[in-house]
Length: 229
Length: 229
DNA sequence: TACGATACACCTGTATACAAAATACAGAAT
DNA sequence: ATTCTGTATTTTGTATACAGGTGTATCGTA
Image 1 (spheres, protein in one colour):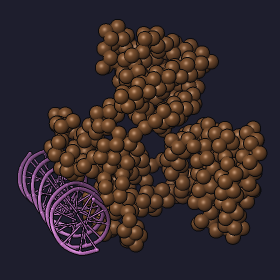
Image 2 (tube, chains in turn yellow, blue, green, cyan):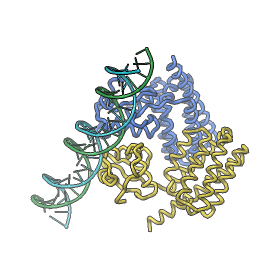
Image 3 (tube, helix red, strand yellow):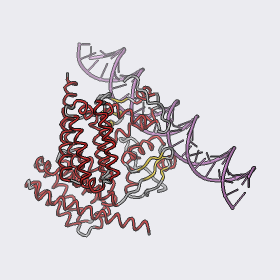
Image 4 (cartoon, chains in turn brown, green, yellow, orange):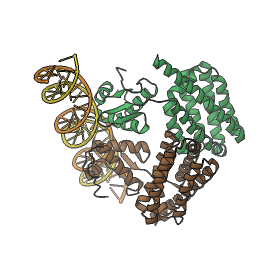
């Protein structure tokens, strides 16, 4: 964490956005552990930026709930429990279920084609065991699927909650023995959408989310064990 | 909107927080209409603060989805549709339902007593027809009720979504013919919690939310009419 | 009159400067 | 030894300065 250099200046994004993304990633991956106090001058120096954009990034993180602000003491990275994971998945499941009928209803052949295209890419990554790329690709697939529902706010809430557990689900995907089996289910999900089989779609999605939760919880517990030594 | 002075310096909050609260309220009430471009120097001058805390407030509003950021053009107040209201209430209903069993399960006599205390205050406001205070008080009651569930993230999502429609629900409460009847239902809700009657509690809550949605939609449509002339 | 180039004003993005609060620490008094 | 206190240092909170980009008005030319 000593040298936290920013990605090469994209020049299209404001520095505050890059700082936001960088810090968010570092917090989510655990690179900056919970409880760490983020001293502004310190991190601004590390990133070779001034305090102004850094502070703006911190305000967004604060709004995300990733850091906590204490009056006149700055921000501290927030911790996070098993109950959090349970609640996040409760939210996720409830909202995801709401979108399913809309997905079935709205899905066009073009949507199906695009999903199958994404699945093909997932197939390759899965076969190659490319964990690095697999995790975000799987997330993109789910995101695309849900977006078909047209329920943008719901999608936003789901993704917002998802961010908190990303680091655990990433680990989970990497470890999961049944990863390829789970991946087969992705194909099935698209089939159900294409056939407008809501009942099967719903049942499978619920199972899918439930398993995701279990692996996530396992990853969290392991990380706790690792912390406590 | 010419003179947007800040509330007398509470001195405990940073200026950015006060600016955030002030702007949020102004947007939610419609005082700053959708589509308005917020020019930083302009608003900083009006509020008699510098751009730095104002910008930090804007970053939070951006994260809330109340304003939209355009590269090199600053932020614009976001508009908002009937579909938004529908989706917000869909989210709200789904999540609220999740909390109900937990509320029944967790509610202590102290919780019940506190709710009844809040109801007593609502009674007074309702009888006096004090719309100004009634709206936030009713919100506080619902918030307190939901918080008993201990599902803090869910509560946070619900309240987050709720903010978007606050201005309409405030109008709705003011107009609602059946306001006192609706208020009677608040008493009933607490009764059901006390008696641990989940079925009745659930049924009434769902009806309650549904009606809230209808009045909110009506308020939105009226405001659209007002806009279009 | 229509079109295009140039100049200018405005505004955002970022850095830096300054003020005030909190903390750490050293030394004195008990 | 301990506690209190005054001071130095660190760090946040806010203001201001400056650079660069965008849009617009103006003017010249066809």
